[in-house]
Length: 118
Image 1 (cartoon, rainbow, N blue to C red):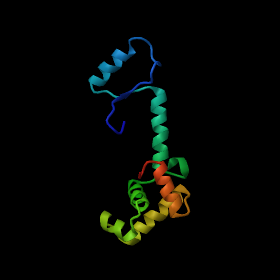
Image 2: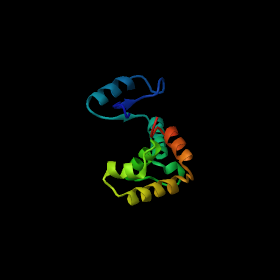
Image 3: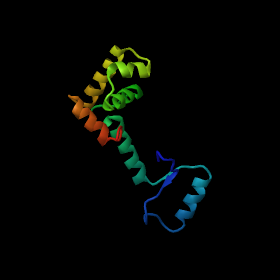
Image 4: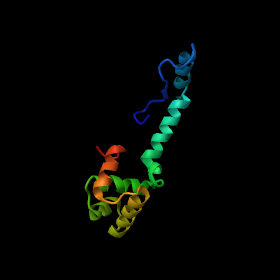
């Protein structure tokens, strides 16, 4: 879906005629997901947003998470995001608290496993 897919159907899980209907629906601009796929996407979004581990992260906290996991210092992050280093430290602390992470190694591992960084 992140790559631009407008529909996702599981192979062999739909009755005859549905495939043609699905193609027409997507061609008309609609998004079509089977319930199983929609559920899996929502679960993945919860994991990516941090909800699977102590609460959801704000957009700014996700930005800080990514930059910290990439090895950027608070000063570098502050300059990139036009924030004060103290504000960056506050966001960093919130990320660690919400994700129940206690050190940078855990944070980087979390970010790699969730696809925040590669």
